Length: 376
Image (tube, rainbow, N blue to C red; front, side, top):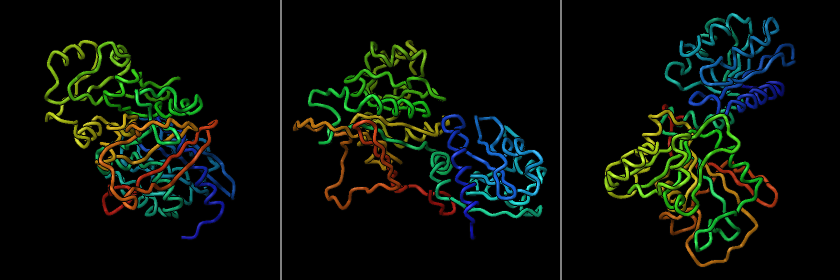
């Protein structure tokens, strides 16, 4: 398919619109739409909140009669089923647009190409695939949960130039600067859940909330096999205000479970007497409807996720500090690899400068694959 420069510009605008829904629409996908006619953009909109009107509905309503004979650019195939809203295909047909360009088809089983087929059979000029890679990257969390039943996992840490996440004593306040920490709070504000190990709670006594609050209130999850989290911790003391889930195993004392429950925490029990199985935890979070999980540490927890190939992307802040100690306070410990050629090379690298800190974001080559061999 040959795309014009205007086509590419319009779809880029639609993708930018879609991204505005991050944190507001999950577990739905982020979707943006642009209506154009005679080489000019008439309207643009995005899916604004879960259960609300879809992007196409808002854009076409904004365009009104300006849509007739025009082009609808949409980042995801229009839906054709009754869910929380009526089928978008009905409105697209009623709008009078002559052409529909979708970045990608929607693999959701009740859509899965049927929406585009309905529009094509009605006589519209339909094409798909413009900026498809960008659309898939944008909605990787939605696609992963759809194909695997598990949330998208983002691992975050801050470290010194010599690769330390803390001093030998465990002190880590503060490696990154205020600007970087503000970025982390914004990230927390679009997550469904934030996870740490009990070691991080003992060392830092974090609250794990977004300040200021974002569009979502993330559940705080602590991997604590023996329910040893202090009852005086800030997490426990705020459990009645912000969800707190303590993941334990069979060795967790009943008295500890009871006291934590009385203070507002939820106890999530797993079989066995060792570490919490990462796969079982992710399966449970997926059943709960979680699309995005932020893993903040510590090193053993991050290592467990990496060893289980359970990390989808990383968000790392590197500060111009040199700690210099001879100790194992690296951000991610785990088993690792014994040859550098076996180390994972990240993809889609993005870098930013925040004051003197360097932020590096990267994505793992996806260890999971969707139905019909579709890679995200």
